[in-house]
Structure formats: structure tokens, C-alpha cells
Image (cartoon, rainbow, N blue to C red; front, side, top):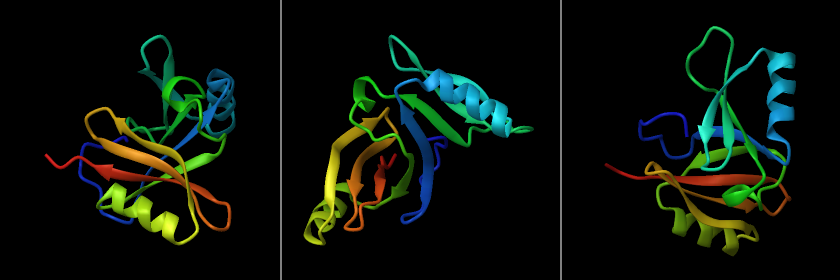
Length: 131
């Protein structure tokens, strides 16, 4: 997530794209929409924060489909803030949704999990760590 502020529950807090060839899509969107990029170290490789023209604040991310992101679908994934991730995942299941990727950490900022709703749309639910 791009900000250290605690996000308001129910808001979209981040968007990213996870694909096998992140550099290719990084350069594609750089040319098409004018984004520049900043590397985000994933250990043995970099993912990318994409920065809009005239800004210093990243607007989105483009990530490699490997490591912790290997099982994520190649879609523009939105991350929606929830108060309690486990409760939201249970409610998702109760209402006919599916958990596609189990909860995982986002550094020391929070945790997220990926769901598919009953219509087939995919999103991530994000729980911020309260300081």
C-alpha cells in the first residue's frame, strides 16, 4: 500500500497488476499513460510502484507473478479496506464468495487476502495494522 495512514474501512486503498513479465507491462503503461516507475525490492527481483506524471506519489503497482504473488490473477486488483480481515473472509464464504489467496502480510503495514465474489469478480480485502 502506498500510504502509512490508516485507511478508512470500505475504501479502495490500492490497485496493482500482477503479471508474468512485469517489466513489459511497466514499460507499456509508461509509454501509454506516462507513468514512471520506482523499484520495490522483493528480495531477488523488483516489482514496481508506478508514479503519474508530475507526481512523486505512486498511484499503482505492477508486480511479477512469482514468489508471494505467484497465485494472483493477471487483473487490475483493487484492495478494499476492511476492519477485521478474518471476519470479512468468513462473511465472503457465507455469501457464496471464494477465498482465492489466503491472508498474507504487506510488510509491517497490514494483511490482505484475495476473494472472488459470487459474480466472479476478483478483489483483495486489506486490513491495516493499527499502530
